[in-house]
Image 1: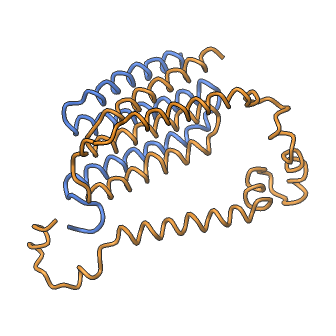
Image 2: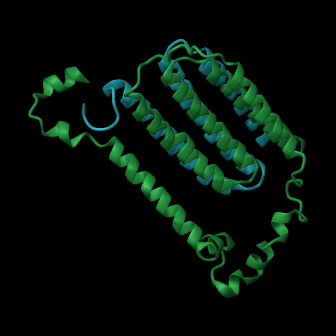
Length: 191
Length: 87
């Protein structure tokens, strides 16, 4: 128990120091790299919380794909961030207020793993009981995702597919540019 | 035994983190984040055995792949200046 606490405290400390470094940096590429490192540590945090599937998603989407997307977008940006003119007081204040509200709300949460929590009382027992007869596959998570909440999963798949198509369309080279018969050397100069 | 490995990983992670934050050049930082990923892969594996759930090795493999892809993407951006198409 105490070692679990120590691991969590260590991970939170690392995430906090990465976040502080993120605030203070003014170079775009460094920001992207730090965000990737943050996601890696966050995924480790999810593993210690026993949320393995979330950790999978965080590692592949947060640390992998979004870093590459940021980099692809970064090619179109100037290398240095401009110094911001407006004051930093209002954003800092709103962040502190929001964080305070979230921490305050977290006191109302049931304890982790508590059996009497509403989430374990509502419909989950019926899923666990009926999964074998209704669907006929041993894995309850799969039967919930693919059958009990099949429409939800279908909608999510459509959203993810649309996002993927949009990203591909954005990353594609401009076909109008391609048709112009420019010598290759000139394109290189423009880039 | 496993706890000692975890502590060693933690200390290495802190050292790498110092390098990420203070790093002189961008390449130092890229290398540091890459090695942080490696340390985290080792950490996940050891943590899996420490908590008697070695199934977590799957995630360590995904991590290693993601780490590799990320580093290659950053370096490709540096060498060619873009990721989409052949500029």
